[in-house]
Length: 77
Image (cartoon, rainbow, N blue to C red):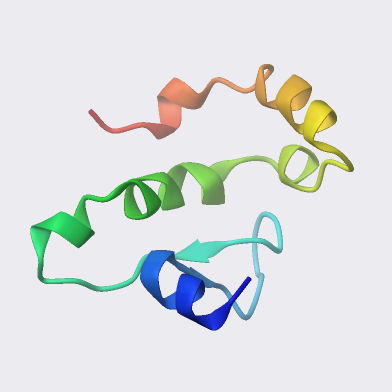
């Protein structure tokens, strides 16, 4: 991922103490347009996914495993 895209959307975590190794960090923003953008809203959902789903070997396997997870419990409406 390019450095510019990483700064605009999200930052990867450097350490992994729980869950999977592909954790995302929300970028701080005082502007509501960026604070509530798609990339910042999905960080918590992505970080709470099980390792087996995130580390799927292909997109088709990822989608199949994602269908087995109850994502609603991670969403805050």
